[in-house]
Image (cartoon, rainbow, N blue to C red; front, top):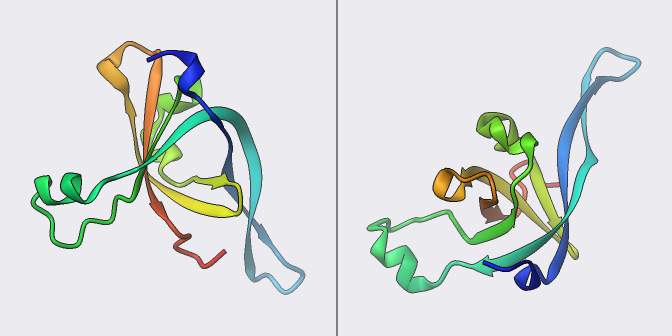
Length: 114
């Protein structure tokens, strides 16, 4: 994979949880990383091959590996902004375990409606 295929600029956001003046939890999103990426929808054939009737994976997003991706559970609580679209990160994979590329498996549409 060459860097020239990273055609898109995305923002990775993390959830910021605070308490309002009444002690109620308020969630907001703050920009965490801004990176170049290759955003690719998963084809229907890939969904059939996974033997899943209701597959939720809708896009794979390829980015350069960063140290922040060492903690996959932490990354899975984040989301991606791409243009006006929101993708929840389902999982992150260190491609070939070489710390060069990371694949974000994402679902379009935010779980919390934001």
